[in-house]
Image 1 (cartoon, rainbow, N blue to C red):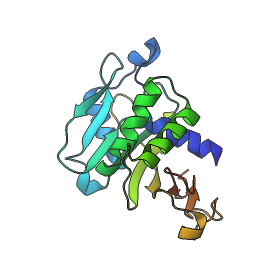
Image 2: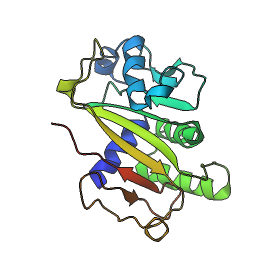
Image 3: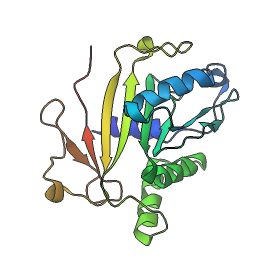
Length: 200
């Protein structure tokens, strides 16, 4: 559970600065956009807003979209390949997390600050279930130059603030492949995790 949480959290709370290795390995904007949208529902890919990295490794908007989706490209400084897309109602939550990480805050500090801000009304969270889509693969299955990916896998995260085991009927861990379960119950970051079986 902790491993999944750590992987997902640092995948979407992208770093705003990179070392020299990362700067030399940032894919082209075309490849970043091509791969980022793979996490989004197919009908929403062409008009989604894309966040990624420029040639200096700086976190920037690669494409301003016109629909309800935001997508984040793969972190060139991270292990493996992982992109994510989410509904616009999650943008304040995601943007706040990125800003706090850029300030040097760690995971617990980010969690606690956003928890308090949501409780006070300063930070708005969607009232209904809102989905984050993640598409990931191993390094050997990702071609950084062409954007081709083989044996990619999906993960789905449905944010339902303050939801609990009791309110959803979901367990705290999956008991079968692909079974949904709840993480961070009773908090602003309560969410349903759905992990389809991994492709070989």
